[in-house]
Length: 204
Image (cartoon, rainbow, N blue to C red; front, side):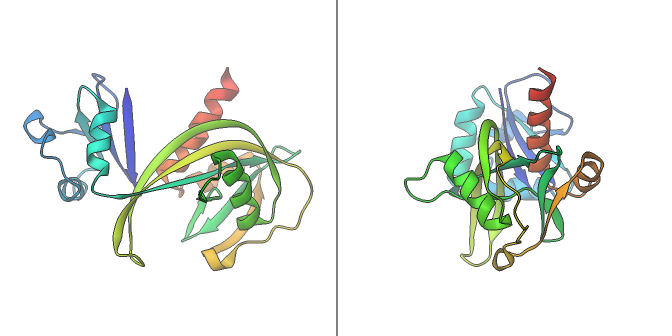
């Protein structure tokens, strides 16, 4: 089992597998005392930190106590031409997503946030995966750990693309596969995980 937390372009991996990925393997003597500060220190010289533990879920839960946990949902929207809906925000291409409202299901949140951020109405087809990423939110002066639930959706009607500029979204675009591949070169690791999940499903 492997549990991953992304810190932008770096990955913290809790694993009970022998070879989960390439990266710096944390010595057993330091696993128990692992803190956010230590992880950030390791990330100054390493892009991937592997933490060998017998129970990755329990280890992740302990580490998560240093963060405010946030739930979100979003997805890959595909139109009738096979194009994907992408947004440009904070100088990177991304996928639309947003926070779950109280009492809201993840799939409903995904469709709502996509429409709010892009103007596109879409129907949820199936779940893809979930990801976690950690970041410092300067407006609340706290570290947050966001778990995003990702879905595959299909656009249900032709609509004008309207970026939600108050959320910092500068562009919304339908992207063919060569363009998606180009955008992925500068997107977040979480987006690569979503794309991998979608391609795994397509190969079945």
